[in-house]
Amino acid sequence: MTPLLEVIALSPADAEAAQAGGADRLELVAQMSADGLSPTPSVAAAVVAATDLPVRAMLRTTADFAAGPDLVGLADELLATGVAGLVFGFLDDSGEVDVATCERIAERLHGRPWTFHRAIDHARDTDRAWVDVLDLPGVDAVLTAGSPVGVREGWVNLVKRDPSRVLAGGGLTEDVVPALLDAGIRAFHVGSTAREDGLWTSPVCPSAVGRWRALLS
Image (cartoon, rainbow, N blue to C red; front, side, top):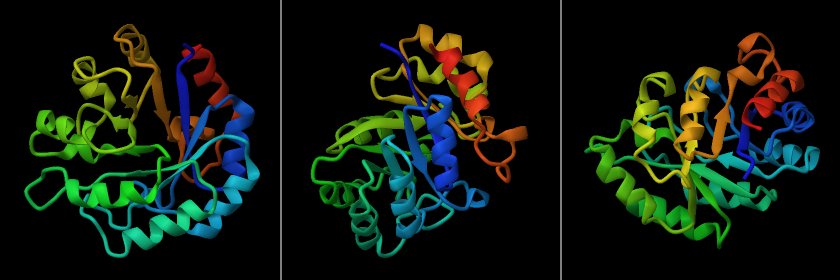
């Protein structure tokens, strides 16, 4: 199976460039200065219209991993734009997966798939968090670096997880990809390295996406 390449997009132009470079899926976010918050529904609708790729929109309204207000309403608005799914994941005050909130949001997807994002890398007990997350309805990917500080430090922790659920990302660099592929991981998530000069202020670059596509293929 050819590995899946997911690229972070901030705009319709990013979406078009990612598709041109060979991406398989988009994660749509806003405000990368806060490590990725929810886009507005209007931006989500524009991105869906600009690409043939499946789009998963971030559902996150605070810079930490706590459940913010009005998440159900925002989830409904984003889903109404035609996105293929959502990206979310919340921790409670004790650092454990906020199962109740995640289940409440998952119900709104009515069978559409979703990604549990890197909140899992910040859980108090990551082994327990993985058990809790994989029991949630509809989740088919867990965006994880294996460490709060990134894949370069945490990739060794990914090889013990279910490779069919791992979406490897969070500072992903080319040098760790062979080991992840050898471990059976077949889904990869890139952000700044898909952009001109590796800067979030630069647009997605089709040739940079193409290099990732070639590496994974």
